[in-house]
Image (tube, rainbow, N blue to C red; front, side, top):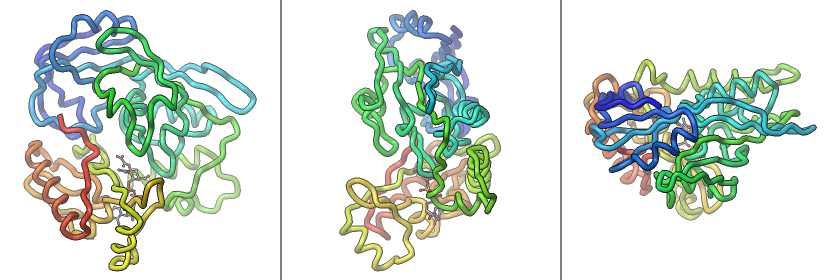
Length: 332
Ligand code: EPU
């Protein structure tokens, strides 16, 4: 276990906010975390790779971070494999491992920043796949009692960018291990956007080809947080009623959309783009010039500058389309 007082979080948030935590604690096993729980007091924030956070200032409580590692095969049948992964593993290292071993299911989620624990909290998703499609269970420790609790997939109450760990049980449980189900005879999922086009016309595509195509698409569209601070998609894509969708579509027949349960999902990035925000800046905060859903720190931006830009965008989208969009990034 490692504990640091007045610890700089600069290396722990991809937006590049230079803030401090009163106490920062890193633990490497469930036993260490159980030992830690009774000593916790005041506010506690559990972070992963810090790729979905915007710190509004110094954090006066305790920041916890898991460095529980390990990728182990928990079960192996003719068709599939169950893999138990430590919450502190980097998500994309796990995806690379799966692809190298020829196990399918997570290749569309290549290059998503963050760690394995957060994948189960956020229900990360991209290119037609969400973590809920492959997650079997999440092992956790109760940050109040120190007891272990295992959440099977259904108990996690997954929905688009949602889970029980972001709602009723927010902040209560720390994820220690996640078990995923992967396929030995992978079925490629190529329906989303331009994946097929990116893959070219090779006869037989593999999950390694898909991973490479997704890496290429992401690198072309999304800013590298190591070069320019950002937290990936800043907003969630709103789901609107069918009636609302049809009335907007009359004015914007080119509008992209996805039919989903409960309505129609409209890409917030497209609406922000239509409002003319793509590539524009306010102070040192800007809208990425290749994907308007992403806000970037041009260097030294304060959280206020990012929030001012966020509010200006939300207002314009509401004025133009009559739709409220909401940040996916957590403000701390
Ligand atoms: N679009 C524009 N202009 C833009 C951005 C998008 O016209 O500036 C249009 C695109 O042309 C496309 C549609 O909007 O027709 C959707 O765009 P894209 O495929 O880039 O996906 P998205 O809905 O904007 C979501 C995820 C991304 C994920 C992609 C691909 C959310 C909040 N974001 O973005 O996730 O990579 O789909 O699956 O759901 C992230 O979470 O950090 C992230 C990057």
